[in-house]
Length: 450
Image 1 (cartoon, rainbow, N blue to C red):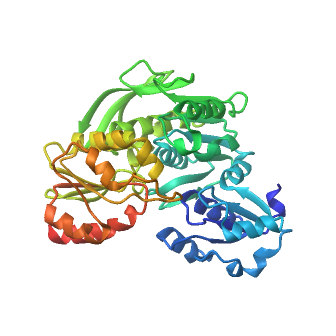
Image 2: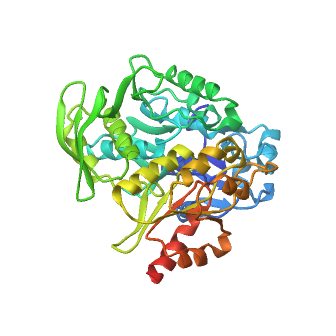
């Protein structure tokens, strides 16, 4: 497929974080863009404000007339959309050019110097830090991110087309569409077992991803993973290693030992060991492109963060409110470690919305163990996303496994009331579903109550 022959690009699931970034790209390069999504969100509203036509009913009659010419229209869809989706069925029946999001991302980045971040955790933050480092050092890049960078206020950045920063998503084996020059693997914990079946099959796909790296390319790997590459870690024997870590006025200060030399007095503002590792991975990747590290060091210190990735909503002496996308037990553990480190001695109240029935079933005991560490747990119903319910798997089932006396199920309708009653010192909202849409309401209500 040659993109220069395409005039119209139609997206099925345009409101997805990855889909919307590609939609922004096509509009930026002069294509006519439109699409469907199930619900209106801040992301779809932003797209509409850019002049992109979006509708919210699965109805072929709502597809704009100009997008029904199959000779110059590309249809892009997300695998999260059902195979029986009416519009997708229509385009297939009429022999349109149809591509998955991952295929299109592979086509766009094929002729660039591609830097791809893979891993079951940390992709979005690492790729956002990497994009920030390259931008701040004047590197001409394009970036497709899986979250809204607080540095760009967007999930898309276009500062040139020589280099591309992308998330290499393991879901549905999407990352096998990419051919990176520099790749990173942050983690390989079991996840997406609805797709892979077993942990070993998931790990096979990561090894296949490594095989996609272009000849002469580089692989950056978290120390301890069963794949060979330039390693990174904290206070160990890694090729890129954080040394002499300390906290000064709420900011991490440390040295980085690289394969060539040691860099001193580096500052980084995002709490948590997991974020330190994300920053180090991004630095190691950026150093394969930017040969003078001084600019990279300065940029690490100015990274603001990513929305819903340990994002402070309120930070006062009396009340802390943190929102995070964590939806896997390992991610919840990482958030807990960061909160305990930065706010010792405070009562920690967590609101968690499980994401997917299958993930909740696969990791139920691990979720229960991770959540039980907090002082108080408020559990919402499972967010189904693309899935039908699984008999016996529910919020009540998960709640029963938690060994925490201060746990309870809460409906969204009475969440604010329950939080005001609880009077948390440190509140953490977690989940990958629609809990993010509750954040502003919670913030307004609890700021007023405090």
